[in-house]
Amino acid sequence: MKISMIVAYGKNWEIGLNNEMLWHISEDFKNFKAITSGHHILMGRKTFESIGKPLPNRTSLVLSNSGFEHSGVHTFSDVQEAFNFARKNAEEELFIIGGANIYESLFPYVDKMYLSEIDFEGVADAFLKPIDFSTWDLEEERSYDEIIEHGKVKSPAWKFKVWVKKD
Ligand SMILES: NC(=O)c1ccc[n+]([C@@H]2O[C@H](COP(=O)([O-])OP(=O)(O)OC[C@H]3O[C@@H](n4cnc5c(N)ncnc54)[C@H](OP(=O)(O)O)[C@@H]3O)[C@@H](O)[C@H]2O)c1
Image 1 (cartoon, helix red, strand yellow):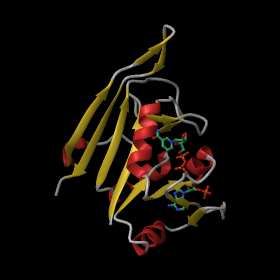
Image 2: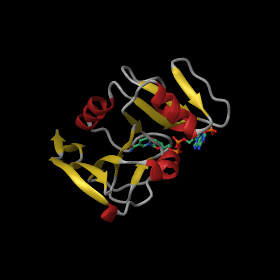
Image 3: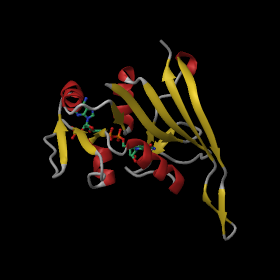
Image 4: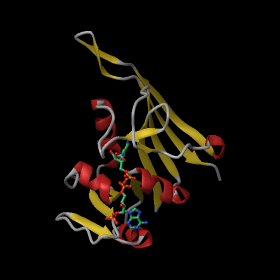
């Protein structure tokens, strides 16, 4: 089973504030949905609470040591048990979907990264640990323009990149 991570981050590696996202980019949400649909998605308890419900057409696996439970999700206190659950369900690509804590601790397991680099700088309290790309190959890249509506930035410019770990 391949282990992938998917994340959107700003210019200073910022990913969240007050357990919420820092931007609203509908094309990025659509992209996230298209990539993760049909798969197991693994997240920390705080990210699940930020989303608030299991995402449709995906199997939600939540990591928690505090006995967290919620209908429609599978909770694990052990990462390997979560991976094994997905393997037993014949998953071929599991997606780590955050947050900061989970991205950092599970990074050594990641084989493939789906990254949205957002042209955003601002106050945040959750960050991605800076990634050293020298051990990764760029497989795909797309650029998206800023969207202006009524003279205001509706959504910032961003780049989508897919990286695979070098052998
Ligand atoms: N920009 C993006 O793409 C993106 C994506 C996802 C999330 N985010 C942002 O990230 C922020 C949340 O990140 P966060 O670091 O505060 O929280 P988090 O990683 O979502 O969740 C942390 C919690 O997960 C549980 N946990 C972590 N490691 C574990 C392990 N090895 N075994 C068992 N349980 C474990 C613990 O839950 P218990 O306390 O219950 O034990 C811990 O408190 C929010 O601001 C959110 O909006 C951004």
